[in-house]
Length: 243
Image (cartoon, rainbow, N blue to C red):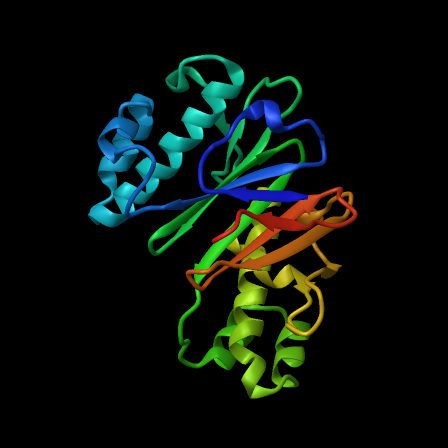
């Protein structure tokens, strides 16, 4: 189960190893200022932040990484700046030497971010729903051949929902696996928005799992969110009222 909240909450609430907590963050009004969150980053992370030439991208990174360090620091009862983060070859940050193992993922889109934390390997993606030019061409370019064929068979009225379903679910899976967008065409997800989301086929061992469970959610601000959880039989999203 994924519980979505608008604030960090209390780690003591996590009493079930099968629960995931996710926080939907308004990047225009974050719970802490970006200046304060910048001070929670390591020297390397601060240098990375300043390498972003676009201020909005820099703020997204600072807010997402700063709040992540704040949450992990609260859980580990240590200074957020000393939380031992390391990186997979794909660049995905992971927590080193936590017992029990804690997994997390951070994603953002224009104006919003999601931080998800729990005891299962997971991925999350959020995209602002908007008109897409040549959506059929994009699916043919980035999705698998099977998905592209399925997409062309859908009603045109379902194309936008199917595209954002596919894009967010596929991004969530590759983030959970610690892979990159180079693997987008190496597995298939259910694109038809009239059916529940699921992983239908995996063709690359880099995406192997004990079984991917997918869940999707559309926020009140018209953003599409997808969660991928490794080893779960199913995932249910329970957002706070008003989200």
